[in-house]
Length: 187
Image 1 (cartoon, one colour):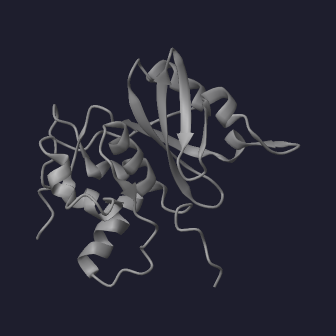
Image 2: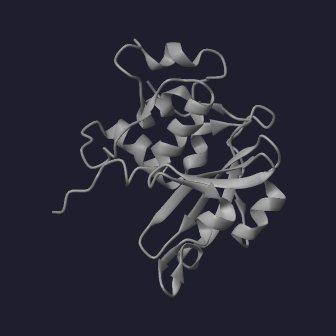
């Protein structure tokens, strides 16, 4: 079995950590631990987040997870992203599914991939050459997105995705009020 850097295959945890850090919360993404989990309930929660990453968020207006919308092309991001709005962009590649952060900054749409550490204006990000005849966007299919900056987070699910540095006693105490318990999560 080949060893994999656990921070390059946990994009669902990385985008959650990035969003929370943007909100001023000092946390880190958990490394990809899904293969090492022994607690069945914890494993199910982590696995659910891999396939439905929007469920960790709660839109305070609708009282539900943010809706995931299909996207015909990454070129449409310019029409979707408003000032100071952040979105998670999901897509499939021939190898796996992936999720990144997309936002408008100083009038331009930027894409950030915390798993790869690449941050650039969207046109540059999706036009990166992978080979002389292949660019990044050529690998992408099944594009979809949801807005995240206006959402609250379910702290019990967040505990499965992020960790707090040693000098902070507990995750729940850090989040304070926009955090609520997930109604389907049993203690």
